[in-house]
Amino acid sequence: MESKTARLTILIDPAKKKAFEELCSLQDQTPSQVIRQMIREYLERHNVDYATKARISSR
Image 1 (tube, rainbow, N blue to C red):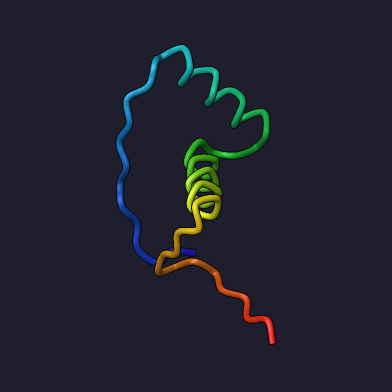
Image 2: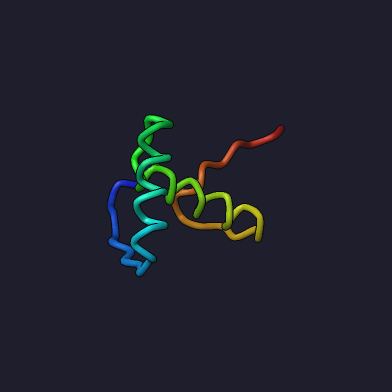
């Protein structure tokens, strides 16, 4: 897990925000947790490395 955090501010339609927050709540997750997972998956899909990426060595 990252040791420092940075803020990411987005603009979203209020109806989508409400629906997203309700779905997150039903899944017992915070919106921040879901967004962080989406970002990790997006970076992975595009083969982007970053400093805090977990690395598993295959020997």
